[in-house]
Image (cartoon, rainbow, N blue to C red; front, side, top):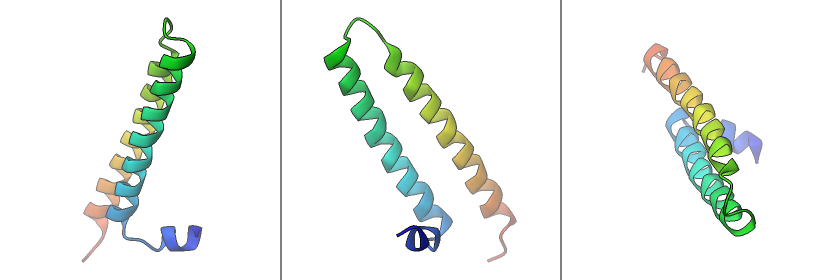
Length: 69
């Protein structure tokens, strides 16, 4: 399965990561609300995931700009 994912175009890989990020953040926020509604630890987790996605987005633009079509 990893070979198929790595074989996808960069844009498709970025879209896949974005979808996984949204689903992961939603699950973490729901678990936080159900388990510890008074604490907002999930915001730190979501923030870290968003920062990691921003790094992927920067990589995509750098690769896309430097790739000759």
